[in-house]
Image 1 (cartoon, protein in one colour):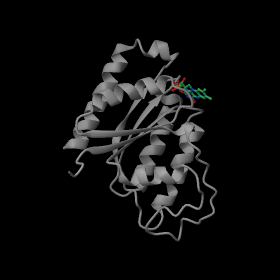
Image 2: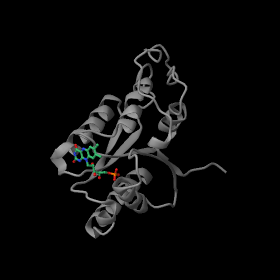
Image 3: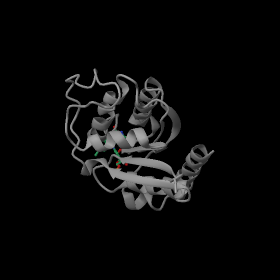
Length: 192
Ligand SMILES: Cc1cc2nc3c(=O)[nH]c(=O)nc-3n(C[C@H](O)[C@H](O)[C@H](O)COP(=O)(O)O)c2cc1C
């Protein structure tokens, strides 16, 4: 039987299982399981180098063509084949973690040539120690602009500001509700 489930790739960018994991769990609960197949990768557990700017990908039209042989090769296939990519990260120094930024930069190999990202759909979940304007805004802007550049449909973001310890976040029921609602919205967009 043909697998008609929508494929969701979660690229989780925190080096620890903390606030971002909690928020991601809630969003995925809202997304639900029926008709959806989720692959959840903790990027920090993978071996993914930064882009070496060798330009080896520039001449390759039909595939990523990246010259580096690391775990990104598998992520390339998943990025292209997924119906939704959910990027998640804590805000680190007015941006995302260096581990998730490495994946973002390596996406460049998919944008060269035929643009293998065209028509993909992305959404973003961020947690931040500060408010929306202490860096979360800039991290969102990076994803939004990269999506625009890559002709990726940007489905939106959910930012949890003013995070303390993960145990505290777990008690914030308003955040849990809003995160689940965001997941439900993603589900609607995915299944319509
Ligand atoms: C190295 C580092 C840099 C950070 N930089 C920022 C920042 O620029 N803006 C902000 O709002 N929070 C910042 N934070 C706070 C984290 O975004 C926040 O604690 C987040 O919820 C941690 O998520 P995690 O528990 O999933 O790792 C920083 C934390 C660390 C460890």
